[in-house]
Image (cartoon, rainbow, N blue to C red; front, side):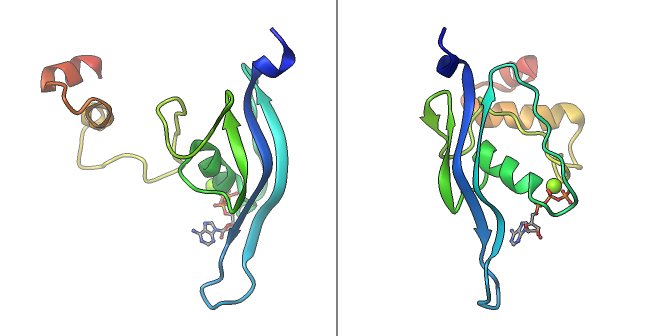
Length: 124
Ligand SMILES: Nc1ncnc2c1ncn2[C@@H]1O[C@H](COP(=O)(O)OP(=O)(O)OP(=O)(O)O)[C@@H](O)[C@H]1O
Ligand SMILES: [Mg+2]
């Protein structure tokens, strides 16, 4: 297997800016970020509050769109959320009126909308 076949994620010239609500200068969270992540690699992104950790992770997950640049996962460009990329949210992740099991079933039901309740529950 060549080195390129072991690459899981390629982050190429990734930039994310947020426009200013009052029409002023946009906020550049990161600009022209370039790095690769290999299969099996364990990577931590660290930095002070507000430095852009969640923003870049949201782009890698396909939950947010970069202003420019691309994210390539196993040779395919990331264009949106996908079941091959799990996300554990920092907060607001659970539906508090549901039990833990029902929270899991909610996701399974979204993935397999034609399954019966029993299939969804067994899978959860
Ligand atoms: N939707 C948005 N619109 C405008 N600015 C945003 C938006 N989301 C985040 N920001 C700004 O982008 C910057 C990066 O935010 P981000 O949430 O990625 O930081 P973080 O490193 O995850 O912080 P924390 O450690 O507090 O979770 C911050 O200045 C934040 O105010
Ligand atoms: Mg964060």
